[in-house]
Image 1: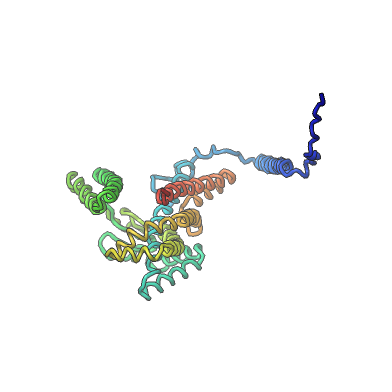
Image 2: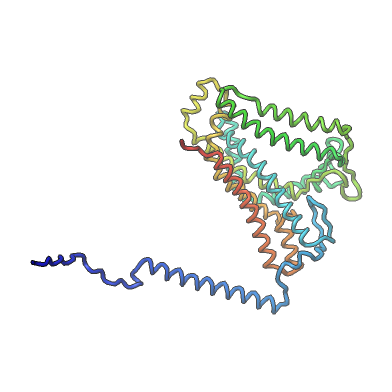
Amino acid sequence: MKHKIPPTSTKPIEAAVPFWRDAGKRAIAFQIVALFIVSGASYYLFSNTQANLARQSIATGFGFWGKEASFEIGESLIRYSAADTYARALLVGALNTLKVSFIGIILTTILGSLVGIARLSSNWLVSKVAGSFIELMQNIPVLLQLFFWYAVFYESFPSPRQALNPIKGVFLCNRGFIFAIPETHSAHAVMGWMFLAVLVGGWFLNRWGYQRQELTGRPFPAGRITAALALFLPLLIWALYGAPTAMNIPELRGFNFTGGLTVSPEFGALLLGLVLYTSAFVAEIVRAGIQSINRGQIEAAKAIALRPGQVLRLVIIPQALRVIIPPLTSQMLNLTKNSSLAVAIGYADFVAVANTTINQTGQAIEGVAMIMVVYLFFSLTTSVFMNWYNKHMALVER
């Protein structure tokens, strides 16, 4: 019996490849080297910083938070005095930054949307005025705009003793815009919570009305009902609490006004500069979003007898938002970060308060780290909300 001899393999024997010619091994080696370099540089910076701080007898850590701040802050949303701690002073600065950023984002969105729509107007004058506004505001640095508006507030208005008084309880001077407000009363808090509850309920009502319209084709006036309840229910609570009408009217005492509510020149200049500058970019975003809509859809909406306002609200804006939201988010973040320029005009934002804290305590590393963390928190919070909204508005494929 003959035995079969197995055929010899024709597959070539692969030669061993040196590791420096192996792309995978080479990548791992490069990453290890990079890790050693970064670790060494980090250790050097850390050890050098520790040695310099020890040589200058500067303590590290955040123990200074509990010490007395010993400096005043011109504006505060909460009660504050120089006898309070550094932690409370930093909280005041963070709330001031949050205040100007929140109000600025709302006003920027409204103004930018109006200017962007006006830029596409068929009226020649309206379109050119909107275009001129965009070109002017975009090409003047925001810091120069802050300086300009700050100078306008201080140079154009008189001193408190010669303050403009257009109507009773309202004054305008170089110390700011001062006006009367209602005296503190328990009814006001209840009215505020009721107004907020109506807005939340209106949101759910609007969603239900939209689903109802999808099923039946009949619109539901959720917006008008919400607006009526938002006006009527707080007024009803005000009447049930005895209709309090006492006002806290500002009065001139010495060289300044006491009482009422004051909008300082620093806050006004910062808010105005940030809103005008950022709204010019938002206007271009809105214009681009509207122009991205197919012209045929607009013509189809007009063909079924929709009014121009309905075409804009029901057809154009819902689709344009999918293009508008991502770059709009970037502009919101820019406005929040640009608010740090407030230190240039004396507004007590977080950067200004942190700088004062650093000067008094010598805790420069901790102070700068806090500034970074606070602005990182504000930016990430804005991004998370806008990303959620963007996902909510995204087209769903079937």
